[in-house]
Image 1: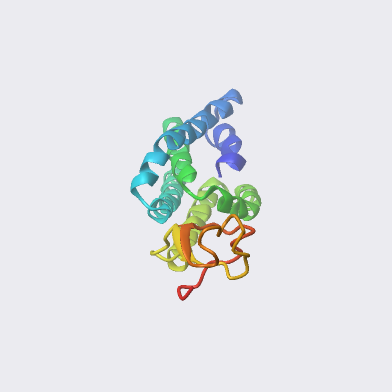
Image 2: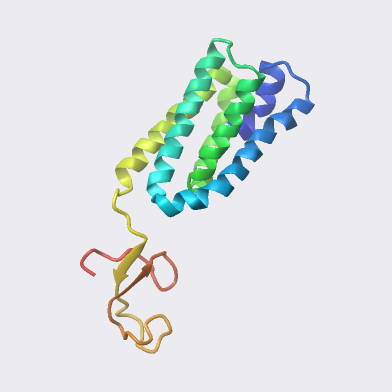
Length: 189
């Protein structure tokens, strides 16, 4: 919504001059910086899931709320600037890599809907889509999703640097899918 429709909201909806588009994007960047400064300390205390799901839900709620304000003509310059700021903070707390996949759908959707049905309906549709995505993530992402997993490497030679000193036995560490870890270990492993 921000990337695709800021120019339309600033110039067509609010009737502001062209240079205000750049000013409107400033809070979006500031929100990113605020999240970058605060998020590492938050993630020291909370799980990724505990940060990402509420942040994504927050995005949906903000979009739907701004849709309602826009529908009733109550959006103004301060509301837009504040909305872009808080959207970016929430957006920055969501999973960056995963968000790129959703952009494949939502960038064209934001542009097409914005042109076809206007900004209030576009804000509402993208907000509803965000809330639906949060609901799906909450159901599909296990609440118990530890970073450190115990596993074994029966396929590695005992002299391999990853298992040297433990042979092919079980060990545990922060687990990521890579060349040595091609799938999540089963609970039985």
